[in-house]
Image (cartoon, rainbow, N blue to C red; front, side, top):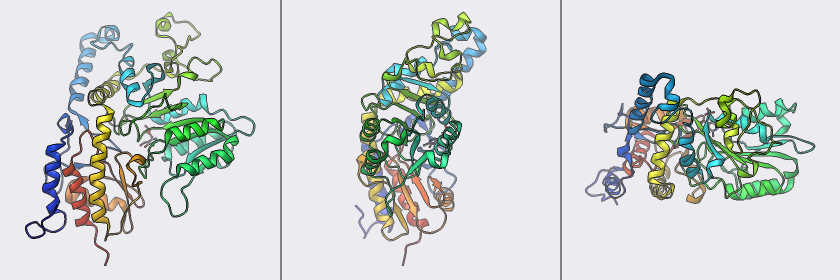
Length: 435
Ligand SMILES: Cc1ncc(COP(=O)(O)O)c(C=O)c1O
């Protein structure tokens, strides 16, 4: 704690404490490339934007170069002869991706981008019929999901304004209560065809009670899918045991696989091989063994690979594989432990900064109801302006969601206690105290 006689005011005193914590709990920062700072007193940025785009693992460049080299040396023969042959390349990602989300390998595949995958999954799992026509999302769903479900409703000839239900928090509250979702399902579940929520909300950082909501949704007769963009690699998941119908996630946030990186898909075992489920197909939907028989009719496997359509982009698969190997070697349980420590530390510092400034943490206080992200609502000025100043004056990278939310994510793989301290120090210097 700060000694007010010998240490500078503000957050100066806590800096030594942050350094001590880092020495005791160093994480895996050495495996990542941290961008240089363009402002402030430190050579590297304090990177708190891994909820938006994760940092580059050092191993990624080597792996990409190796794949490029296979192409140079082998040309088309690389499909079979590359160190990791391109034909079955997606299979190298399946087992680690399945471990990450608590799935069986047959239930998991890496392909396409997130919103594309949500659409492909809704082809199978949003099948409005009779009075069961509605899609339920959270009001603060990521806009891409809102657009996706509205366009799905229109695709089925429905009016999106009535077919899409947006669940809102109670007046004066920022996050959804699980009980309110359960109550809604108890009352109106018979009208719901699909419940599609974010596992961790992109704006508030709230971690939903995925097992409880899934169970209630399914008990009400709805299909339950999850957008895990902000959950995969952030919180432990057990999609198979939780009986989730389907899920999709991206790999550019906590999975550190690069901008626009490929997404992952989960379909529960009970749906695999079901000929009654509509699906869009291409040559990657058919059994690998028959792919080159060039027959006019596909023979889809009884795995989630039946949802694949095209042959995958190998140079985009490599970074995902590298990242998943990293998660495998560190393990989600250890990462979650460090995540709880880091985010709890940042929360304590934010409590000190926000007490007399127009700043409010809107993420749930209960660590069980959040991942690593803490979202701060600013009561004055613009979120964009604040993040610009944090970056240029202090070398702190956070991200703004206009009009008034700034998100800070201490990522357990590479963020440090000192990064958290820099956030608090920069906010204290940038946001004026209220008189
Ligand atoms: C929760 C959520 N859903 C969907 C998307 C869109 O992802 P993509 O552009 O990969 O389709 C994002 C992107 O950040 C997101 O955060």
